[in-house]
Image (cartoon, rainbow, N blue to C red):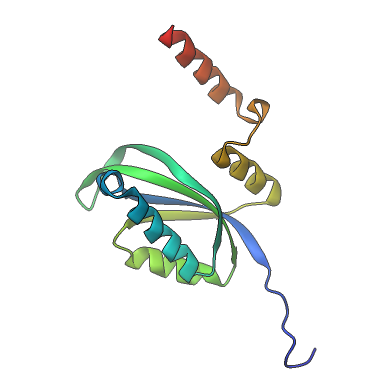
Length: 140
């Protein structure tokens, strides 16, 4: 391999959960999303799918915050970007906590399909489908 040739960098598949202040998200959702995406971009990540996941009371207070919103992002990134991602997330004033998991291709594809709303109903866990049926019965 010559000096001008470079090896292609292998990108890993990740699922990231970012905890943000739900009040801040309610006031400026685009700004919060842009802050999360900027952190990912600085780490060399490419977002594939993202959306708000869960908004509610936290199990315990974090930095005076009692409610939070979990924002899920599926992304591709070289493994070397993880150190940058962790540091940028810690420095961010928007992200309170974060968790990133390296996913196998099958799980990543299924998660992206669910986040994007493209998953067939049979791909969802039975408990989710059953809960939706119970909710529908309660509304009738």
